[in-house]
Amino acid sequence: MSLPPPVTPSLSLTTPPPPPHLPIREIPGSYGWPLLGPISDRLDYYWFQKQENFFKKRMEKYKSTVFRTNVPPSFPFFTNVNPNVIAVLDCNSFSHLFDMELVEKKDVLVGDFVPSVAFTGNIRVGAYQDTSEPQHSKVKKFCMDVLKGGSRIWVQELVSNLDILCDNIEASLSKSTSATYFFPLQQFLFTFLLKVITRIDPSLDPNIANSGYAMLNRWLALQLSPTISIGVLQPLEEILLHSFPYPFFLVSRDYNNLYNFIKQHGKEVLEKGKVEFGLSEEETIHNLLFTLGFNAFGGFSIFLPTLIEAIGNDSNGLQQKLRKEARENKGSTLSFDSIKEMELIQSVVYETLRLNPPVPLQYARARKDFQLSSHDSVFNVKKGELLCGYQKVVMRDPVVFDDPDRFIPDRFTKEKGGDQLLNYLYWSNGPQTGTPSTSNKQCAGKDYVTLTAALIVAYLFRRYDSIRGDAGSITALIKA
Image (cartoon, rainbow, N blue to C red; front, side, top):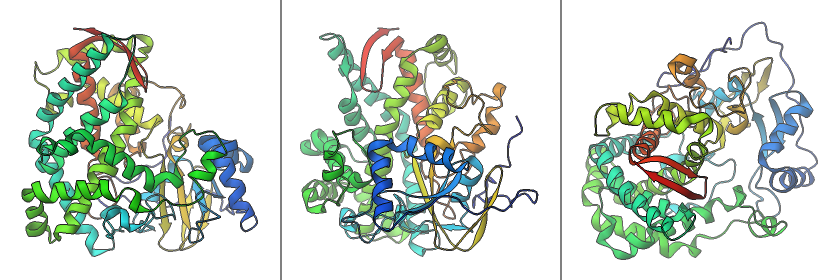
């Protein structure tokens, strides 16, 4: 397969110029009548068609991977939110979202809708800042430094907390035919991530140790409720979740408990933020909580169940191959170095991220007028227009990925040409071959996410001969 030119994997992530032979085309689609168009699209998006079909049906209707549409939230109580977007649904057009010369990322993390800054202490945290804002550089450097510091204890803490998680699941399975693991998984994630990101042991406060993950869940849910679907019987979901934003005071006690816990026990990391990066104590804590809760805890809570389901199905003898690779590479000790030798395990992680990215939607606003190219056309984009990419469609691009709807465990191995395909794996707000820096908005923890997920798979297949389960429960474990 002849692949299109990838985003240049430099610090700035620049897109190649449009090929001269492609025709210039008017962007198809419509925003509809004021009020009525956004309401109609909102109902299709959440209710009648659901998210993925919403984009697929319009792509088929307009015979284009680039088109105009509306994306919720919208009327009646989001009067300051403009739902008008340009959808970009192939790898070529989607890659423009990462070119910071063409687009900006100010306050577009979840679209034109911005949750109240009360959720982050009345501070705009780094995730909502554009690269042109001076504060962005300070916060991004701080986050990357915090992760680098945590890497010294990362694998040790991961393994010790996985031991506890698996012991608990085994105990549950001894009493039942299945073990629901989502909340135990979140407890594991909270304890592990709090230690490696803030260097604080949650056991210093029993309330935080036992309920910290639930506090983060409530804080996340109230911020994001207008933008997500939770499968509640319609029209209740539309009325209760998608019609108005919830106020911060409903979770203020939870957030303040977490804030005060870090303030009391995180002297080392707070001093680093102040002395080395010029951040105030408040800026440091609020950005730490956002990195911990929104980026790390929230992302892993969505991603890991889909990874467990992918390996739990054991299609075509996958588990035997994973078990063999996990046990034969680099002796008995798991490490970042040893996991990099486990090519199939890493490929399974990448393939899961391709099909089920934890953050399905990416946004960017045109910094200036420019020409955006898909595989077959060029489109004129005006300054200020909002671009929206739905990754579950983008990363099933048939021009780039063979048999794009099928889970192929070894797709990203070198033998299958996976090293080139990594240029089009965009789950992290940039290509997998990219490097997070202050000049781009790529996830600071990109490599930690994939390596951690791979370490978890390797751990599981060193501990177990076989695993049966899905995204919600484990039904059988056969110990090694």
